[in-house]
Image 1 (spheres, rainbow, N blue to C red):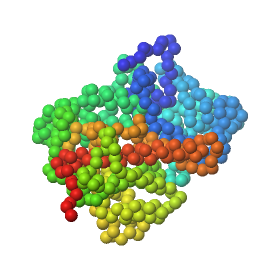
Image 2: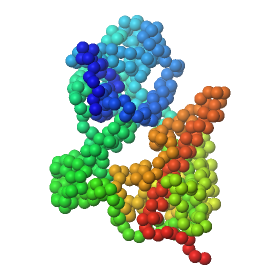
Image 3: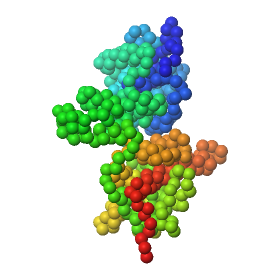
Length: 512
């Protein structure tokens, strides 16, 4: 896998981006230096992080930052685009590009002023990654400006407010930075990449996900077993179980006894983990419960398929999408997503915060009222929770809310109750993909949909002819969002339709 090493007489620098990658995942840093570029994929999470950074810096600064060292010499209040250089503990070249420098009243070689680094973080707390990256920026900045950098600034959003945290760049933090740089350099000199991480949930945020997914499947990594996270993987390794196939071959009772020393909850899960591994190893689904998984569809005159798109950082549930599917005259529910036409109508309800929840509820309740006896299918608990809470906030009575609850049918819950599947996740994408469904926009996922939404909101203002905020530009982003939401609904139906088929019930309509 490794590409030819560069000439060590001109070693490649250790950079702040490599340090940040290494602090998240040692394997990721190695791949950033040596991995095959054709397997590196663009990732929407990076674009979302940059968008968040821009927003926080705009909140922090009264005017647009200046650029380059010349701006530092001129005493600009804020500076971007400065490249900093120095040496690592073993003499390797160091290089960093701070996101933002803010002027402070500390003398430096640039005059009566100096600068401190500023980092915009996502999440609720300042992590080790944030602290060490700021320590690196501070160290190199101190060398560049000829004056110490005793502290840095961390900014973050909380609702509409800007939070500011002053971070001391202490000797202890400097020592941690030295240790991390040494270990980063050792990892980068390995002939092969470090092993896969135990908990691969965060791999969804990484540009190298495809490559690592291939490796995980090749070696039968325990993280590929649905329900096995980092903690359980560690316990399984201690019990001598090192791969998916070894777990599939394990004796459930014997494994339960070995895991019981770590708590009854782990022992109780042993039979389930073994059974799931066996299903994945054979590729054959296993029925858990006989009978009809979706009895609500037996006599229904039609059904609604419901999917919500949300911005989790702002609790903005911006799109409520519905497929409206009347029952065909022959009484048999249609196929879809696998090349067959779908005799349904898509209805998107865009929920703009400035319009208020009352207007949204009127539209939602009106749509539901026009199809009073139709079940509402959704995948996962999000739709049920959010719709029920919205109804309660709008003063809907207890009986009416109970009736609404009875209409909502969680396809994910019914699937888990009736079947064990050969998939490494029971999320919608994994299950629908197993059934052969493909999303119409390559690479589309929740993060990219969120990016499209934020771009649309950014452009949802005064129109600039031919510019990014032109009607065509705004319409394009909105159409992408709608298409993604439509596909999520179709994927939900593909899974629901499989449940109907596997129950052996054709579900013709009830007789007159």
